[in-house]
Image 1 (cartoon, rainbow over the protein chains, first blue to last red):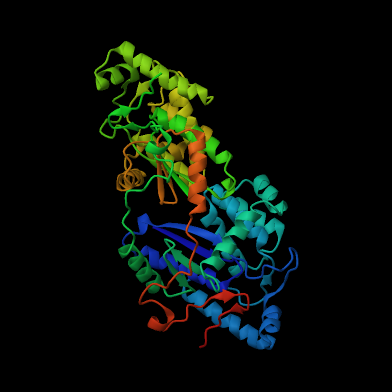
Image 2: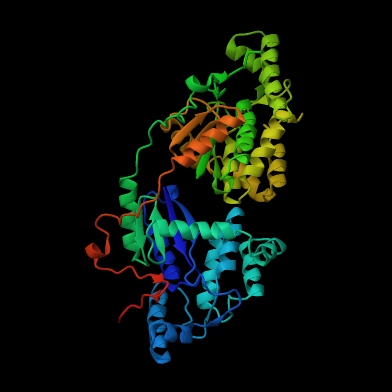
Length: 246
Length: 246
């Protein structure tokens, strides 16, 4: 079974939701047969690279509230994070473009360390004093995740590297009906939206498992079956390999 | 779009078919949106680890033919391989259990180097003088593919490491109706069997692309929608993040 998780590293509920999902998954009987794939979703896709601001004033402006109210709101999200055992600095965090980070996460996927880089980036963004909207910091995290520094820098510095993959993920999120993130998609059959309690994720996994389609014998591509094109499609089987006649 | 390829590294048509598939894929307009995943299939699953024999006498026994006839049959497969630009030693090759190699290929997948290890192992088995049914040789290939030698050795030496993944792949091949390998599965909707000409793969990719299901808005898991469980599933969207009330 395959679970795809659309997230942004700047999204607090994605950070909390990932921990809750993993807790739900840990209690799921068939967890070893679940493949988890991360997908990109930028909360602020129009923000320019390098246009970095502080979270609290940004929230106050966006919601039309006072900075004191924005601070209280952040504090409530922080309480939720801490109840999951996650560090959370409610004030002084930066907000900026996450496009380069998403591109790098796609590169990390090709190296088998995407999950490591996501966890490190979430932690760096929400639980550490230093800003993650900073080239040097991101490259430190990339190396910590297991990437080669020069390779990671080459991806970070080329705005087109893995850009197609990020945009494709975002287009798919829309097509699948995501209204926000985190957005969890189970086998492309069910969607679960938001940082739900761990038990909800566990129940969703159980439901998706119980209703998974039983594989059928697959048809050949129409017009390309052996009878249509006159080739035998030489195979090897338990009785040996087909030997072509001269 | 996702293409899964069931193969055995001891299967000549898998070696040839992979090259032909890649040639067909290279000519496919949407090749950048195709994800290729390799799956395990042992041609000789009952062969014990370490029970290694020569290919020509093994073929002669299996088909009830003379060794001269087996040699001619191998020569014809070699001609097919060479017509794809692939090296092929038609005589003197070893045959043995590929279970440990499949386990290692699953480990390589977690490190993002599965395709590298498959290509190196195919080449080592079919085009090089040295046997691939040899621990030291397999570990050399693992290192060449980019794996850590100690990590690869630990997987190789533990018969249960990634054994579940190999068996699961083999069970799925059966469920999908594979009668032999290579077996190509396009988006779990179509099957293409055998080392078909590159053009057949290209046409199959085009057909699968043209008929790919258009994503629908996904339903919530029954009984777990917001109305059922009374939680809002806090998300972050373009307008900000949900802030829980105390």
